[in-house]
Length: 172
Image (cartoon, rainbow, N blue to C red; front, side, top):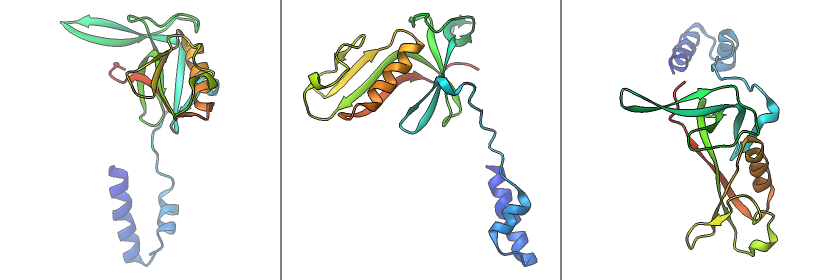
């Protein structure tokens, strides 16, 4: 945010010098550095509502208790076929939020009015309806299945939105 304040002050200064065009000011300043993390592996990226979510199949989030406080930390040394469990959740990085998160594999979605038999989702693992709404949940068992489910649900034309359950409270 300080960069933007500086840019405004700098543009005012340049205006006083006679360089009133903000494009000229931007050229003198150069590009603003955002400090955003780069994508590590493009093949592990899924797009959810415009946000790039990168999966880390070799990592898991493991809860730990430290001084009576439950914390969640990332661990390595897993393979993508290792199952998601309550004490071993998957790790993602949201490139919009610039934050790591934990996934249980649960993915919620909503459909437009219509017949479920037209969709290719009824045979997915953990498929169930939530209450009397047109909302449903499936549960991916590992990172490969998670990516496959997100891509499948996102391409179905009768599905209005897809939202995985992501916990952003893990420690870095």
